[in-house]
Image (cartoon, rainbow over all chains, first blue to last red; front, side, top):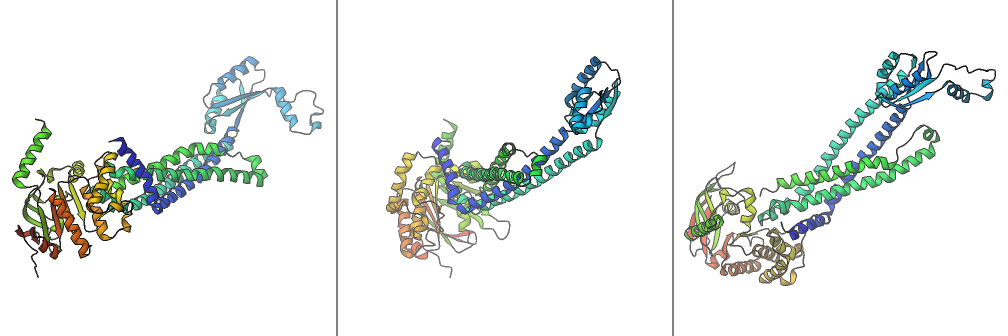
Length: 298
Length: 247
């Protein structure tokens, strides 16, 4: 194919958008609406998952030792715990540190009358997990380690968070698949209708000897451009609306801002941008390609 | 001799012996109803001007569709320029159609483009260099009397002018055959005669012209070859004939 022909088909693809303003606007609006809904849902789910993950990261297991366990042995156990794959962080709390932490949680006169450290022999490791669902396995192993006296854990919190995380995962996958399916159906229908009303134009091109590529290329490019524009609009909207909504919630509900950490819009858009663009451009391509093909057999 | 040259030579010999269009005992049936064409044999020589006439349902449109390779014959062989259209593959059809100029009753113009773009489109398809398009399109528009209207949108033109644009588009690639399906069907008598004059001029330059029409006055006045069809068969083929009125 000649370069001039290539540029001609590219130009025609862009011009087609303006020639068929109504169809272009309808298609762009459909794509934008579907991807906006998809984006909003993703932002909610991503924040929810992030909050659950933060909560999971705070779940820890405390490991106490038998009396008179030498420091070397405690350090050795600490190294063994650190090497475990399910462990993300191990923090050593000495007797003194434990007593200081306890005192800080009470009024200043709380420690009066204590001359010795009442938490003598209570040095421990606080073990944080990478995945809270593996807490039971870790605890079973810890309890089998010689010189470990006791392992404190929060079974209910771990189970609840693990279950919640799984539930959010399944529900969000389900809803995202449904939303994507509906989007694909609506968008491809709009593209199909838009091209079908121009079947006459395709017929004329074929009658005067245009190849399938020559007929198809401008339509496919048009579909892809419409998909791209339809994807960029909701991304821009989400960028603005998301930041505004987070700011509003944090200002209006001070308590929430103390408890929850919202993801920045950059994190949301980092995932959403390639997905939305791929969906928009992909559906524009597939929709126009297959629809034009139906009218090519003249 | 290269294979392509050999094929071309054979096709030229075939055209000399059998005509540029040759239907050999061609029938065409649709899934429902009686056959649209029934054992039609027709030879049209290079450079001829032929009217194909007949009532609705006589098979004229099916004939045109077979010549355009929009349809394939149920039996028999359709040869155009020495090639068997039944053997054409889908991807070969566009190249074949570039040898034909085609004009329809409803003009079939790209209505969102202006006159120049409509005619230039036919040249874009065959990848004519832009400099040649800029030279050829105004020349062919001048031939059909539309030199001053190249910027006009097709919807702004009268029926006669729109048919001239369609004619210009059909001619710009200098086709060997021009097929006109009811070219005057939507035109008043004055414009009809002007279009027919243009078709005669095109024929005088060597292009084979096949006109499917209902227009008795034109057929009777022009005294050209007339092929009359009825219920899918050719009932008469006269060298300088007139419209056979069934009524």
